[in-house]
Image (cartoon, helix red, strand yellow):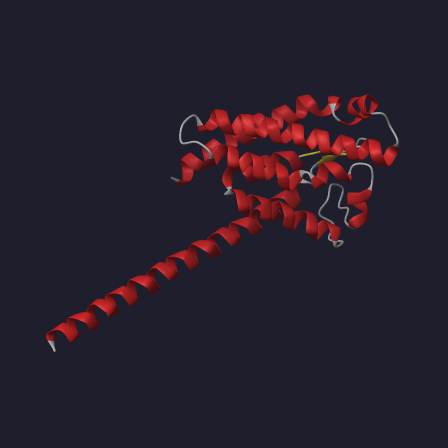
Length: 199
């Protein structure tokens, strides 16, 4: 009888532990999904801070992408940015200049937008990959993600517009490099401050 009682008590304790762990995991998942939505909203807002130059407007989209990658785990960073693109593709005016619709992704500059989820993923993994020199690895990851954006976006631009690759670089990339690097540095600084604040 005593063994049976002890067994039941132990089973009860195990079940309670499993319930508590399940609750912790569930609440953590909810927290991350909420944060994911918040970063999607932030990206939608920052994309509207625009200097309307052609063919590519100057906006704070990349700053928001860098921040998302720096502060969210990889899959949530990817999901947040992908959600932003899907919202825009389905007509919600979240792209720069309050534009929306699938045609924005298929026009000359759509390749740059399409590269955003990869940028967030690369940036997030670069921070997560090491326990030391995180700021250095984060900066390197952001630079790599920016190069991916330039490459994919410019290749798509040349395909749609018929412009040569070098000419496309001179139009779509080179004028933006100083501003993009400034956004990168700002994102590294701001993300570091945010982490220190919430610890």
